[in-house]
Image 1 (spheres, rainbow, N blue to C red):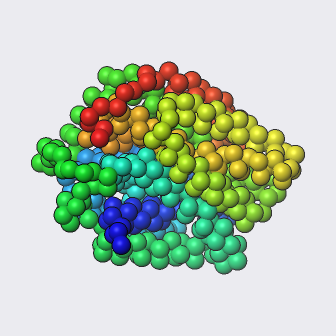
Image 2 (cartoon, rainbow, N blue to C red):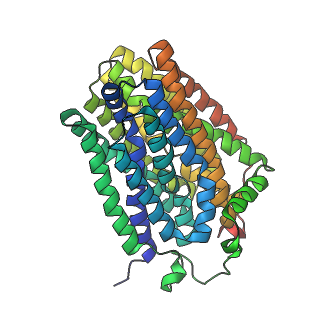
Image 3 (cartoon, rainbow, N blue to C red):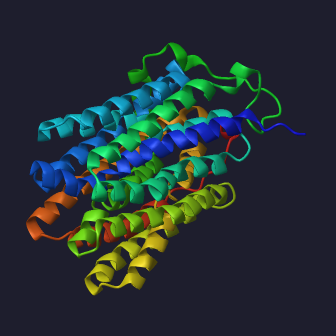
Amino acid sequence: MKRIHYSWFILVVTFFSIIVAGITMSSSGVFIDSFEKEFNWDRSLIALAFAVSLFLYGFSGPFMAALLEIVGLKKMMLGAMATLLIGMTLTLFMTQSWQLIIIWGGIIGLGASLFLTVLSPYVANHWFVKSRGLAVGILTASTATGQLILLPVLAIIIEHSSWRWAIGLILILSIVMFIAIFLFIKNKPQDIGILPYGMEEELELHQENQKKNPIRIAFSGLFEAIKVKEFWLLAGSFFICGLSTSGLVGTHFVSYCISFGVPLVTAASFLSFMGVFNLVGTTLSGWLSDRFDNRWLLFWYYLLRGTSLLILPYALMQGSFTLLTIFTIFYGLDWIATVPPTISISRQIFGTNKSSIIYGWIFASHQAGAAVAAYGGGLIYKFFNSYTWAFFLAGMFCALASLFVIIVKKQTPHQANI
């Protein structure tokens, strides 16, 4: 009987680790109303804490990529999960708004950074040669899987008990994954005497980063990238990607639905329903990125996402369950589908050895956009008592992103990508 390659075990543990980090970040939307009612905090202030978190974990990405090369996969994953555990524990004891900003904006944002930025391309690049795009698609989709399974559960716990019990559930899952990482994660295939999945003979490995300063490594990657036009196009499109996903929908969708009389559990269920289609769409996107022009994939992803965001305000104002369901399906299929082709293009342009760090900077732009939308959405609600303009503007920006990606120069894969 043919043995399963150990790369798939690494992928499974990484998959579930990202689920835990992903539900930590996406749960912010179901906690907004609870924090507002219990502590009498202004909604824009709560949104600021979540915006800081999104911004910090995004801009930590390039440095996490550099540290991965120096410290190794296992220690980095253990450290990041421990940081999440500390942040979630401290949340149970907070009483002041500045504590929320430090805990969610700082500690939790830093803990989530590794899992939600560069971990997927790092694992795919170092443990896979064959099916690399599929591996990225599966790992990227894992954030949606956690959302799919756990957001309605968290909403039910909050509605029938307390937000603190919901935090407790996330804490338990974090402890389980800390143990799994400790037991099963290895730094690289060579540590256990195997080659990456799909590699038939060992190639010379580049180890020059192991003794360098991670800050220098991260910034040297940035200085190289900013000279390339395609970097700016990808970073610009990913800014809009973050603005139109985790920043706006991930943070404010539940509250937007509640403002139209949709119950908390129903709104969270719609968000989790998106996760079903996101799981399918992102995994499929990874498979497609191995086979088709990634620029055209991104063009259609952004255009369809923008269209769906323009449908949402109309669906809520009309109280149309049918239109809301259509939005959920189309938006869900597209939520993180942009990640595999963006990673693929950056790998084609900059090569396997540098692409993780440079993708980290591209993802930093993604999170800058997410932070703008998270805080900006709160401000728009404060001034207009509605989120409608925020979602309308996000839809228009997605149309602009589709133009950015289509003018990226078509790449020919080279030896560095093998």
